[in-house]
Image (cartoon, rainbow, N blue to C red; front, side, top):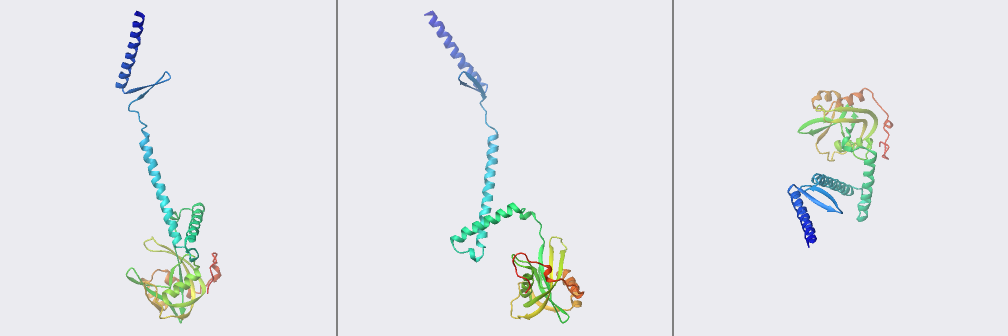
Length: 270
C-alpha cells in the first residue's frame, strides 16, 4: 500500500507538474508539441508572414496575364473582321482567321521588336504635274487654314509608291496622270518637330480630267499655278517641299522610275 501510494503520488505529481509546465509555457506564448518523445516549441503568434504578400503578388500576376489574354483575343477578333473577302465566309473563316492571326503574331514577336518601340516617319507621295508653264496644285483646308500643296498623300498598306502617287492625284484633283520620272526622296520635319515626313516625289504627265468627280475631304479645289505664283504664296505652302519639288523639276532633275523597285508583288507605273 505504501509503495502503491508512493508511486501514485509520484505519477500524479509528475502529471500535475507537466500540466503546470504546459500552462506556464502557454502563458509565455508557446505551444508544446510532443511527437515520439521529441518536443518542439513554436510561438503562438507564429504565421507565415510572407503569405499575404506572396498571395497579393500572385493575384496581381494572374490579373496581368488575364489582361494580356483579353488583349490578344480582341486583336484576334479585330484581325478576323478585317480579313480579305476570301476569309470572311462563316465558321471556316473564323478558324482561318485565328490561324492567320497566330502565325502573324508569332512572326512579330519572334522576329521583330515591339512595334510601339520603333519610331517611324510619315511616308508620303507627291506628283509634280506640269502643263503649259503651270503646275497642278490643290488648295486644301488644314485645321481651318487654306494651304497649297501638290497632289500628295500617305502611302497605304500593301500599296506601291507608284500606285499611291496615281491614286492621290486622281482623288485630290480628278486628273488621271501617267508617271514619267522620279524626282527623289525629300525629308522634312514640321516646325513643332512632332511630325517627320519622307516624301517620294514624281513627275507626271496629265492625261484626262473628270470635272464631275468628288474630291477628297478637305480639298477645296485643284488649280494651275506658275512657279512665280507658287513662290509668291510661300506663306501658304503646306511645306517647303512644294516649291523645292517644282524647282528641282525646272532644274532638270530626273531619275528613272526603276530606281524604285517594288518587292511586294505590286505593279509598276501605269
